[in-house]
Amino acid sequence: MPPVPVASAAPSPVLPLVALLIGLLAAVWAGPATAGSSRIKDIADFEGVRENMLIGYGLVVGLNNTGDKLTNIPYTKESLAGMLERLGVNIRDKTGSMGNIDPKDVAAVMVTATLPPFARQGSRIDVSVSAMGDAKDLRGGTLLVTPLIGADGEVYAVGQGQVATGGFTASGASGSSVTKGVPTAGRIASGAIVERELPFEMNHLDSVKISLRNPDFTTARRVAQAINSYLGNELARPIDPGTVQMMVPPNARQSVVDLLTDVEQLRVEPDQIARVVIDENSGTIVMGENVRISTVAIAQGQLTIRISETPQVSQPSPFSEGGTTTVVPRSDIEVDDGGGKKLAVVPNRVTLQELVEGLNSLGIGPRDLISILQAVKAAGALQATLETM
Image (cartoon, rainbow, N blue to C red; front, top):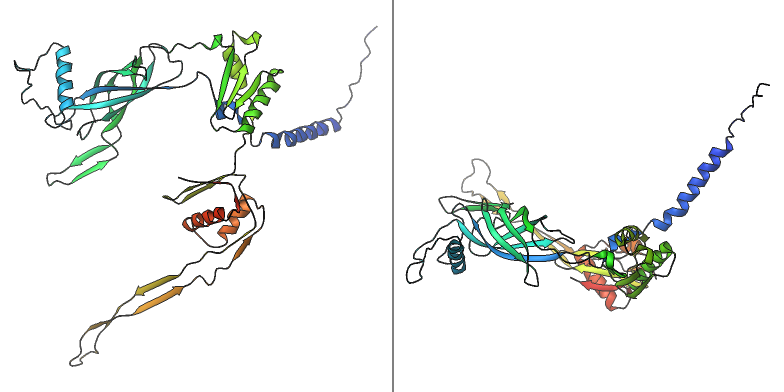
């Protein structure tokens, strides 16, 4: 008996519409929750994942008569003699003096570098080179082998290579010169080789401390809550405003890196205190989102007098006798006493946007705004911390 064909039902136009509405509702519901959130990796650092500073002293050779003057910089002269002696070249006489040796192609430099976390033996890092003496230009120079030591006095890397500078100096025979950038400082890309590793193994940790870059009680608690919600257990707790301690679950003791990879992707909305930062040198003002101001009346005005001189030349009529050409002074004086500016009342608990719009309506600049904010803070109406850089 042949199979009976079954007629397929036509797709209902209601199903795509329902799916679309569900997607829109999900987007609306999830949008505000993640609008101001940040990943934990962007607001915090993990214990042990840190850089280390390295420093060293070396010599740059091969300069085009722009190095140190050995008669003025004795440590460059001694370093050059010591380096040559280690290579089997003795430039001292019987009395120990080096005579009048004074090459212009050698410069003493400080070499700095940053050792990345978990840098392995044989990997390369960038180094920065800066002149110490009276060298004028390091362009074209070569850094000789320079040990780079850490804060504990141990050598962690060795640097050497061609120095690349971003500036130059040129001078003429008449004494005029031009300088662009800083020719006495440069970098060597991948100019140092790591010789010593920092002993730190993450897979043997029982707990991990997470350090917030901007310490805050509320943010620390939110980070702990996000971690506990992800792990499904109370394993994280804030121990101070800047530190959250997370216990490593027993099933993740051999895969701490995988655990931290998942934790650092969790999103948290960081909190911040109301703060107004003022830089009086540049006239920069930065206000936090939570800045509020109580009811206060603000007036700003100052007496301004502008005097402009527009002298005119008066000439005698053509073919006149005895006339002379004279300059007739004409002065235009304007006085602005601020009469057009009125007293403005800022209502209670205005937002940051309303505060900025209200102050801008007075027609004042950043310099005057700094004085107003300081006066409002002194009056007790600014509900924020005022910091001056």
